[in-house]
Image 1 (cartoon, rainbow, N blue to C red):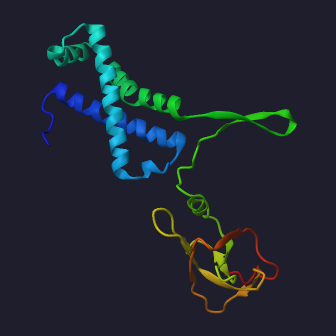
Image 2: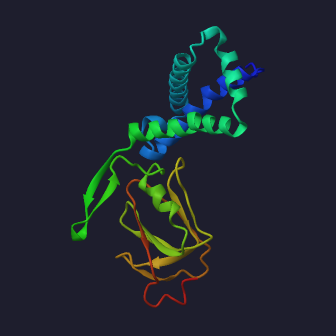
Image 3: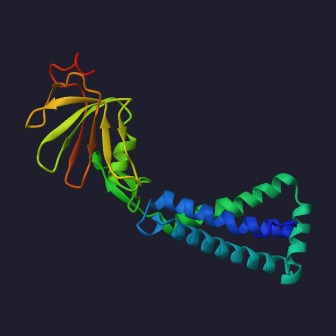
Length: 228
């Protein structure tokens, strides 16, 4: 790959990369992860295609405004930028390379509806907004940072769980789902927390598609002094 050696080449390289990357990032923020764009190659091609589209639009606008021929467009752009104050150059560059791609991504992908609330009020909700986390499991995992109890109903119908605290672990995308619970509790057949298992150093629980995971706030009756 040849390193850009002149001002026009450098700006062309920047214009070719940044708008598409910005657009792809903004689109994911407004829409969330979608099945096709989880692949790195797909996201790269989407960003490159968006960059080329922005570059063509910017080039056409520049030609129309300046009347420059394609052969001397680089020299005219360099001369134009040299006449601008330094701050203005960065403001225009930020607007074209970051601001406009974000705006286009929002206009093309964000969709809102009004949702009725109590008291006759309404609120706007983004209907196609998928969370940045690929699955509901990841969202729950990211918010499990406060001490709490967790119990898992396995595919066989038995319960396993305990006290989930700072030494506990939970896996997130793209890894398989599992839990490490730092203090294992004895569980009743109905899923109630009975008491901590003496000498427990934790329990690893694989979470398959047949499992049910429940996060529980508070402390079970009689377990407040034993939870640790």
